[in-house]
Image 1 (cartoon, rainbow, N blue to C red):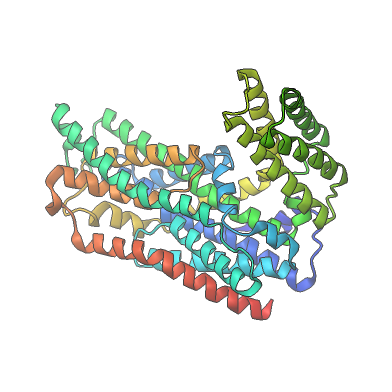
Image 2: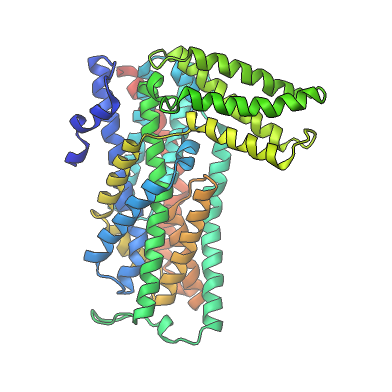
Length: 472
């Protein structure tokens, strides 16, 4: 883990204006988020390699580094939409106006509760969702924030949106895998596809092996693009909590670029104002003027001005998109494209992550994939069903998992790789031999962990926040 020592990280951050005790807490938070993503690597990514290992498509010595590499690439190329969705769960705006120690309490409680539950379920070999754990921890930390500071600690609208995604995804995984498996059984004439490997040298034919390796690659990549972004979001939460003036907005987006987007928006809005008064258009025109003023006043070293600038830009982007959607505002196609482009450029001011943050999370996830993978792989490969995985079951579950995770990433929603793939394997097993083909004991353990994860994570994060609040 020498990649992530303070001596390596601090040069990217620059001069850290924190007192001695807070600097120690800051570094602990950095190490904790790296640890969370490292654990996520061998906890969740084991799902991606279980099928290729148990169908003998790849030996573990090849499958693990291969999956780790594609997880790394997934984080690097996956963007930051999911990461920003995670950030919006907690009261960022309030944190920026309170002492840094409050942010430290929130960040530490979220990270440590997530790591504790993940390690516990990993030790027991139970596939459990890192996504559920992290969301529960953030809700628990947010509730504790509300308890102490009487402010909105949880964005319940965003929590509901994310919760729906996490609940529906395993149901989709089960149903889609079962349907795809039934389709293959009735359409495909290849008996080799439904072969159950036995013995060390019983390996799939070349084409089937390529299919299985491809699906493993896709699950690994999309896992990185989705779960990796959660680590990026947590890393950004730390940076914003401790150094809001520096990281609450993207200072690399030049004032000229922001001003160009504002002017483009204003040109479109001016034509609508000249055509007649419209409440939503008038509000947008006012927001443009206010944002121009806050742009001129923003200062990388002053929290209050940075906070005001961030709020103005966020509000402006919402108003631009509201105008685009409002059917009472007549916009031609070119005007819609101009406003959409301007909103996207302005969003880069608030929705971003430095390249070095993405690189650190990528390495943590990739290296974590290569260590500690075996416990979860054994459960996925041997204990969900009462018989060994056949080639079709492995490919079906991974095709469904890759598709579900990829679509969720595209919509900016976090989803559980563990739940999607585990439910996909269960669906494929049911389609092959009915309910009797499932190992009820394993399924009960997975279901129990699924039910307990959110409340346990919420309570644990709440208690940890209270504990840290006494000492930080």
